[in-house]
Image (cartoon, rainbow, N blue to C red):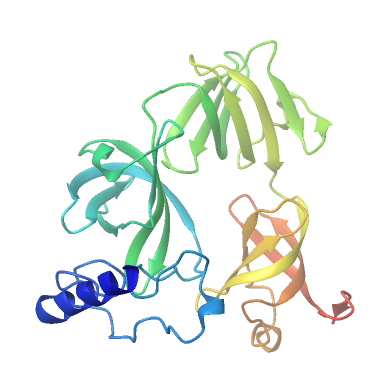
Length: 301
């Protein structure tokens, strides 16, 4: 019965639509056309994930770099599976696409795209799928105030005990109140308000009235850091790479201005590297890089 249904649907599509429905491309979106590509091969069934139907289901998303963005929905088009999105702190307008592979959450509960409305503040995990910005995940938050955040210290008012942080997602200044119970950490050590220097990267845990429960200093200007892991992104035009750091499971962008051109030409995505860096208050600057042998696990200089 399932085989008969497949042949019936494919015959119908061949008469009136493209293989992906209503003139859409393989990515499942409309807009700027993508280069034509063959449908997924059906000869190697072992390579397909269990339950995946190569004839009726959309292909898996490419393993591309993920970027987290926060902003506001300007318009929503559920027919064309796209929306116009304005990132916080900018006047830029982005066309963001989505489809059945996108996951939607409202205050942590999974929902459908019908819950996304014009004017809402949302957060997106985005990636490039061909030449389009695609949303892998959308989060809608209706509760304001309490939560966690990450940003860079702009100033600290010792008299009023107010910490001003430029939020990583919105790029807007947020004022947070320190209390006698606020816990300040630098790495694994307890720290004090004297360590809250402008330019430092911090993570924060705050309450409904924006009172700080805890603030952790991730990086202070002039601090040195060593990252080791897989290179997941390379942009030689900007001398920038991204490293999936093994020790904490996070991704870090590292500027390679100080590394010689002969070394830069050897860097490839997927390589295992060890990089020594200095945080200058804006970014991590590489001072040296070693390539780690896949066989020995030891650096190759």
